[in-house]
Each structure stands twice: as C-alpha cells, then as structure tokens.
Length: 379
Ligand code: SF4
Ligand code: FES
Image (tube, rainbow, N blue to C red; front, top):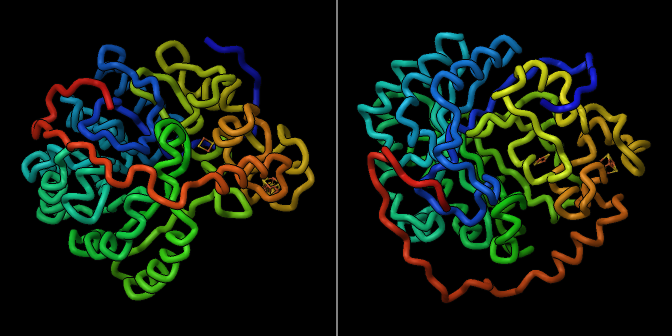
C-alpha cells in the first residue's frame, strides 16, 4: 500500500479505462501500452474485474471503456460487459476488430455494449496491414459490417504518422463507407512505443500543412452525419494539450494487473509511486494516493505555469511528456513556447529526416487467429 496524503477536493471520476489485457494481435509501432507489457498470468481475474467495476461505480464512474491490448482476447469479456451494464454504466468496446463477428457482437450488445471504437491503421489493405504488422484489414471490414448489422454506434480511430498522413482523405472516405458516426484522426503522441519509434513516425511540416484543409473541408461537408475529431501534433504547436483534462480530474485507468493509473501512459513516469486495486480500495487510490495527488490542481506547478493565465486551460500540459523529455514530471510541458525546455522539442523537430527513414524497407505482416482465444502477450 502506498503512502497517502488527504486531498478532499478532488471531484469524482466520470470514466474508467479498463485495460483488460495487454495481449493483442497487432504490432502497431506507436502503441500506447508500456514497453514492459503485463503477461497473461498477471492479469486480474473475472472476479477482480467485477470488484473494480463495483468500486468504480460506487466512486461515481458512469462510462466504462473496455480496452487493451485487445479486450476480445479475454474469454470472460461477455460476463464483464454484463456486470458493467448491471451497474448502469455506459459501455464502450475499444477494439482492433479482430474476432468481432456478427454473432459475437450481437451477444455483447445484448449484454450491454453501447458503442464500438474500431481502430484503422491505414486506408487500404496494404497500408493497414503494413502498419499493424498483421493481416487484419479483412477482419476490420467484418467487424464494421457486424457493427452496422447489429446497429450500434461506431467510432473509427486512426493514429496519424508519417506513413499514413498522406491518406487522410482516403481514411475519411473509408470511415464514411464503414458507417462511422465519429472519426478520430489523432496525430501520434510520443510515449511508450511511439517515443521509441519517434524518428520514423513524425510527420513532416508539409504533411501537417496539407492535412489541415482536407480535415476542415470534410468536417464542414460531413457536419451532422459524421463528426471528425482531429488531434493535433503537439510538438508542432506553441501550446501544450490539456492532457487528461488535468491530472486525476476525470478518468482513471486500471492496467491488466490492477495497477491504477492517473493517465494511461503514467507508467512512463518512473518516479511515480503507483497503487494497485489488488491491495488498496479504488476510492482510497482516487482521493488519497500520492500518484493521483501528485499533479492535481495547480499547487504543484512552478514557473512559468504558476503565474500563467493559461494554467487552468491546459493544466501545464502533459506530465508524461514533461518527464520523458526533461526527467522532471513537474516541469512545464516542453512543447510550451514559454517553457525553458522548448529547445528540446525544437531540436527534435530540426533533426527530423526529410525522407522517410524506413522508405524502401518492408516488414511482412503476419496472419492472425480469428478467434483470438489464446494469443500470447507480445508486440
Ligand atoms: Fe500552459 Fe504552463 Fe505554458 Fe502557461 S506556461 S501555456 S500554463 S504550459
Ligand atoms: Fe500522461 Fe499526458 S499522457 S499526462
């Protein structure tokens, strides 16, 4: 159990990101899961997930995002969905689509899935499979068809990087064709695997400039039919993103082994003392743990954030990014033009190769198991 400090003014969380497993059939080079993946043997049991859901609901959580890895890899997913629904939660399934057939989805929707978020790595079979490192494109089409047949709202999510930035128009067309109500086009954020692969992933300034009018035109044209959410490439911005809407403010993440994270990438902050639901009640972790209180509110800030008029708007930016780039999780996010460390980001941008560093290379995608019953942990 971790050392605790009382912080009575935190509001209740709205959402729980339940990372049921790190097992996944895809090998995306920007995966947000930590470099050290949690093995199947360390995953929480079904009963432990029921307890996490009970405690989260008692805390005030109304939205449950079942994620991973690939949540369909858990054989007890149907029971977990039923449990979340019985508690009255809105349940979102975040999936690669591998294994999501019509009968399987119909059962999950019957049990309580309200929404499906499907990842799409590229706009064509070749590009999608090359980025995913697996022959999964056809499974995604089957999954999208299942979503349409069963009649549940669909969000398509694509992480943007140098390899697929040129496909934005096609990705928008594909999301329309799949019947998505929402499309998230999210420029890669550099933590975990994405940080390791940053040189190959960073889009060029030209790619970012070319994307803007395409996204703007499509957003206007599709208004009322499909919402487009464009997450900017923050290294190229003058201000940081309001990461997590503030630390420990709205959502908590439970990792496959029960570690409770104030942000999904928080294991990157190696100086943070994390707590686990295995030995500490969720409410105690949310309200009183050192990890959740470390950067809550604005008292932890130093200059230039402390006296900045934007501190309640962007909360000093991203704690994980501050730690990964400066070694100090309490530093101003170096993306900010007012940060004394902005030079670190400018140097990274200046060192960016003009040509695709992987151009001409190819990684053969692997076949995947449709049933996803017992894949091994790994990238
Ligand atoms: Fe945000 Fe801090 Fe930069 Fe102000 S100084 S804009 S609060 S990151
Ligand atoms: Fe962890 Fe931004 S990703 S605080």
